[in-house]
Length: 287
Image 1 (cartoon, one colour):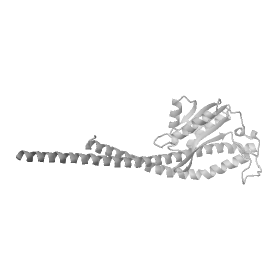
Image 2: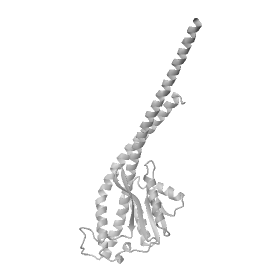
Image 3: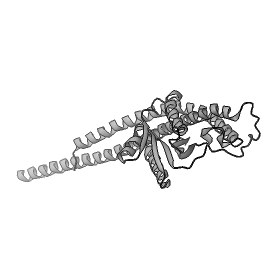
Image 4: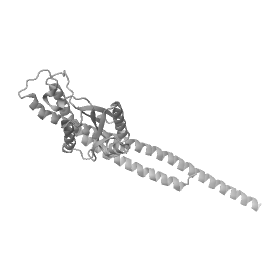
């Protein structure tokens, strides 16, 4: 049976851990609020831009721009967005699991991974997956400017015909406790035939000239928005994980305190029995 000193040390250790998890929860909550404001501000623009581009694309020839050209999917690139740090519950494992399932669904097609985040890079590199390029420390201080390097690299792959299609696997933020994993085809752009409010277009400039400006912008902002959604989901996952850890630490402290009291009670009872036994022995000796 552990001693009272051992139990006090365990309780002290759990309390210190609880203080750390509470502090991490507070930090994650602050980062979540800050990043969520950016994400909610970007959502309407991203939605309307995507809606407009895909609607216009359905009215023009697929030869209007290279990003509209549909090719045989012999070479596929998959962008996987994970975090750079752990302690965020199942955030990274769920993304990695979904990416692996998507890779398996490709069959005999050739594929390469474009990884954003240390967790994804470490996992896939250890298992010998073909990695075209990896970025780390992106989600920590994320901005639109920092996403341009990634989007420019992705655009060049498709323009140079190095790849036939590009998919993105990321977390779409729904609420603090819900994040949906999405596999979205980024390139080539898939036109939508009918969208409410977008039926007739009159082009003042040639479609090729319009798309040469709009399509790169669409891809760049889409990458920015997807990474932003993942960053918000990461902060929310870490906040929930640290809240659960703090609650579990409190339960453990209660159990350890109960055990400490039992050990103390057993020790006191033992001492009382020893004293009583000694008193009885002395009284018999006097008789």
